[in-house]
Image 1 (cartoon, rainbow, N blue to C red):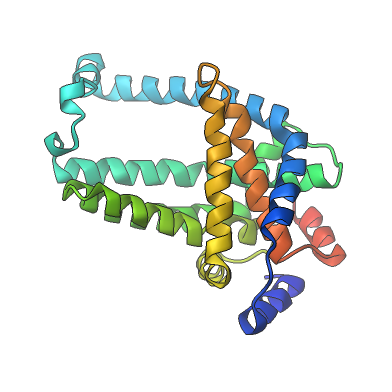
Image 2: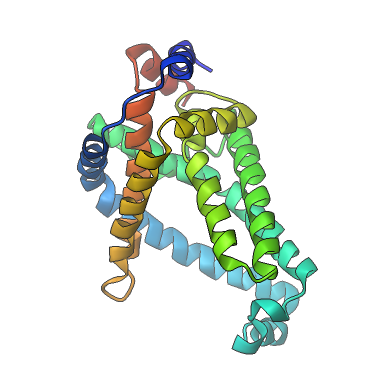
Length: 262
């Protein structure tokens, strides 16, 4: 943890912090306009390539007949899938999301560069697939993903989907600052999780409101053959960046240290 981040977190533990809904939203939106097109194109290309790769791997491992049979509507009903199978799918999903967590970090770095009118490229999206960030991002994301997914899967299997949804939303809300704390504050995985929970607990309603409005804005992207979602999705990462910036902030010393480590 760098010194400025440590000092700021100590202040928040003692005195809390003020967060203005309008200021954060405007901050996020202004920054989003700078990354919307570029981030959207990267999202679209990455999604297409990953989908083709993933489907190809699954088909080669299990065979086309098995995969196509599994994808039949009658076989996708939750009650028709055995709990061990659901947990296996959950574990695989958590592993995949953890492996690609540095991609999310790259979007936050893109927002960081955009605010400072610095150039960013496709390579920016992959800057955190290396030490020391990859390990911490992977561990933090895996711990949260596997815990949340297993709990939600068990609850949903018990046919209480509303409770499963609440658990997922709650975990996502309280760990929303985990990744920016790792890449901007240089925190370790577990420390970032604990600190994110602490920070969000100081202003949970304001932050929940921001996430809800942001999510609604992203869903607008489904208009227009659903392709627009790729170009509205970067807004959420701009929002996460704006929230971190408003709560923790950046100092010259931190910025220089961050740039040197990258």
